[in-house]
Structures are given as structure tokens and as C-alpha cells.
Length: 195
Image (cartoon, rainbow, N blue to C red; front, top):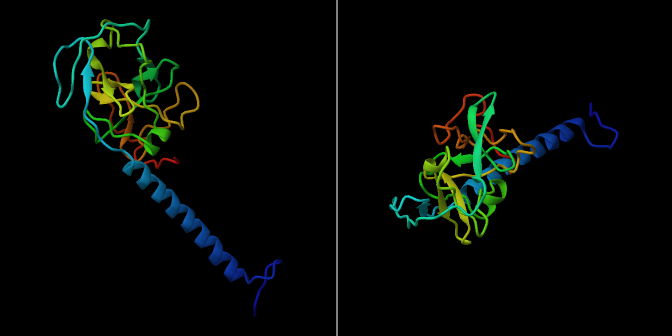
């Protein structure tokens, strides 16, 4: 007995095609994540504001603040505690395996935009976070903000201030917790980025 759906195809064939489409979509998402992570290179050029010392392959200069406010500040999050946010209140993240480098460029930086200083801005020499903030020179010449030597990024999937959708993405992206430079959380670890 050959059952047919209204379009004339056998029911079995329709189910097989639906399963293939689902598997293909899952595989495409996995490939996208792999490409996103692969797009993350490394460039270790770190500048610590006001320190006058060199860290790693860094070139360090002493700077004076030309901006009125720090590029990042702290905010309380009910799930994570005190975290860093950018000037608009969006959560900032670090790439877990990277230490004192800049892994996220090109396609990766589309999903994880770097937190950068304006052309004429610099880090404030005083304030509660001043000792932990530095900058990383990006390939395009922009100065990316770093917390405890680690470059910080926003997540394109966060749509409003206070979102923490990027925490735990791929098991390697984490919200920056004040007092630490981010870390895995059991509530979101292993989430796959849709970007």
C-alpha cells in the first residue's frame, strides 16, 4: 500500500527529505561556528595606560585621559553579579582561550564587535577600573579596550542593555566579571552562536 500526501509524494519520502533538511541546517550551523572561531586570529600588541611598562610583545606608552568617562563601567547582573558594560550598558565579553592577545577579527568581529576608544580618546588615569584597563592595537589602528590585559568585545546577539546572551557561547566566550576576566558559567556554557 503506497500512501501519498496531497502533493503526490510518498509520506516516507517527505519524512526523509525533512530529516535531511534538518541535518543540513544543523551541519551548516556547526560549520558557521567553526568558521567564526577560525576567523579569530591573534596579534599581541598591548598598551597599559599610565604604566610606562611593557607586557609581553606589547608596546607601552603613557597616556592622559581625553575622554570624560571610562569606556567601560560596572553593573550588577542578577545571574552573574558585578560585570563590565560598555558606555551604553551592554555587557562586554572576553574570548576565554586568549590571554593578552586579540583573537577576533574579520568575520568574528561582526558577531563580536570590539569595544574601542574613539580616535582622540584615551583611558582615564584614575577611577575604580583604571588599574585594570589597557588598550590593544587592532590591525586597523583602532585602540581596543582590554580588562586585565584581555581584549573585550560586545555580542551582536545582545539586543538591549543587561542582556548576557553571549555568556558561555561555544564554551569560550564569557561576560567579564569584575575582579576576574570572565569565566565559564554553568547556566550557559556550551551554547552555540547563531552568528
